[in-house]
Length: 202
Image (tube, rainbow, N blue to C red):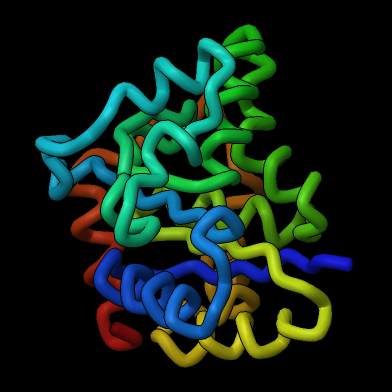
């Protein structure tokens, strides 16, 4: 039996360290996903493939951008309603893109949320993860055998993962209730302000 483990990171650097640590610990890259906000255009897509288009045609983004040498060598650019531009790779990205390709815009909201909940992530957590990416964060998700899941979660946590409960409470304290795919994506300036708000934990 497999279990899905996930973590939200305020910086791509911390998330990429977590992905590298998961790979080094033996988690197959086919079982790891990363979705990172790109509103600040930090990833120019110089080496990006047509992953989103390929996924829309039925090819998995994992195959389209998995690349050789690790998951992070094959990041692809895509857009998620309510989140905006993201850099992504792996099975979760494939699920989100597939949902977007096959749904009307109104139904596409379930792309990221649906992918997470279908993988066993509680819906309340999935909404915080999606909102965290919307506000400039990076989500790393991995599927692991039950016997290795706790170790995989520990790897994520020790690489500066956000305390999801605390962050969710902070979002709710400001009036947020759940991720809204119809909401406007954060601008680069708004992402920068959001990063400053939580900079003490970086």
